Image 1 (cartoon, helix red, strand yellow):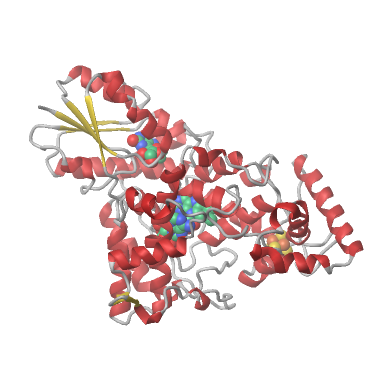
Image 2 (cartoon, rainbow, N blue to C red):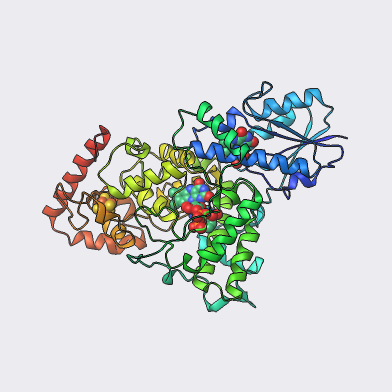
Length: 512
Ligand code: FAD
Ligand code: DLZ
Ligand code: SF4
């Protein structure tokens, strides 16, 4: 009885469930860099480079651990172009009785895997995806019968069940959530630590050459590649985060500073999403820093909430609601994604900075993704399909299970309130409060109408007016609609005119 274990590019852990099912003295492991996965969307160059290099390093680790590994590189002459064809070719040459694979992270690929058994006439066993703390059935049971799926309540159950930051049955410090202490405006002289960087080794350099040649037409810069590509390096990123950044993580979680793309965030999403780091070890390290007095509770709780709360929640949410969730468009948004998302000129400094950093790093931190890029996509009524594709392309941590709920549910409100209780819409004053972008902008954040006015100001009101019938019944939007009622009619007309002219220029891809 010989088994073939297939390891996907985001399953790079010796603890992957499928590896536990095989006997390494006689079974095989297959990994392949394939065109179908590398181009189903035109991933950022740095994302492809990161995944390929991480895959090659993991294959080396498997070899060192005596696994019989069949690795197909992108340019190999026997590369068949898709995972299925690669597996099929292997099974034609070897007597394979069973294929084992851990559940894929994306619906489209899992659908494909589900068809392999019928097509190959070989038993295919799909194992649990143990990159997550909770089983899918836990989320499904929690979600069944609820009209709204609020992360906060899911998170509390996860804290209790997995005993993170608990003092008996009570949350550490008496509160579940310390976000009220976590929204500080960044001070002028903040000295943000440098991110952990690595010099590319021979394997990475070879991959960088390959990507430069084969993926030249993909978005993104390839130069200055400094990411971790193996577990030892990823652990160093985690350690340095705990030592240098965690203390201020909560305090500056929502802050943005010009030319500071990394801030006090952990930069572990690339690694945790490909299995190089486990969710548990990241949270354990943070909790330990709290216990030893190295980091305050507001930071540690905030960090653990992102992983035990948000990360687990969006994964459960995705599998609970796919495939229908992808089709939702509650606000009937249809505008094409403008060229400025791909780096064409814009006078809006906050957008310019976030797109520039995204292009350079295949990374932007949460509040840039949510309150600058996402807020603009929401206010401008951009087509959800195009916005989702953009986010899936540009970030090196993007896989549909995490990208789709964040984009459709959190920023675009396509589900009408299943994930978020209200749209995350904001005017320029929020951006001015949480960043110093406005100080470097050609627009004036203080002006509400006219050529100099910050577009976020009139687009915000235009959005609220455009969707008044749908949104004003939302209890959390009542106050803002009451403010609108009291606004001067002429001022409203002026803002609507400004928004119309902005959209006209945007649709012609003129500089805005
Ligand atoms: P930190 O701020 O240090 O947070 C720690 C960890 O918590 C992250 O590494 C991540 O694993 C987890 N986390 C934090 N927020 C979220 C969240 N909202 N959902 C799920 N996990 C979370 N994250 C991705 O991993 N892939 C994506 O494709 C992705 N797309 C996003 C799209 C939008 C519109 C928004 C608003 C958020 C998106 N996020 C995504 C969530 C979040 O922005 C990133 O996880 C985070 O910026 C990664 O950087 P970090 O590791 O420095 O995170
Ligand atoms: C993201 C990615 C890329 C760029 N390339 C490959 C690849 O060549 N081979 C592979 O097995 N996986 C790759 N991946 C990761 C997959 O796209 C990922 O496993 C699915 O999207 C499911 O999450
Ligand atoms: Fe962005 Fe408006 Fe501030 Fe300019 S003024 S940076 S467009 S929020």
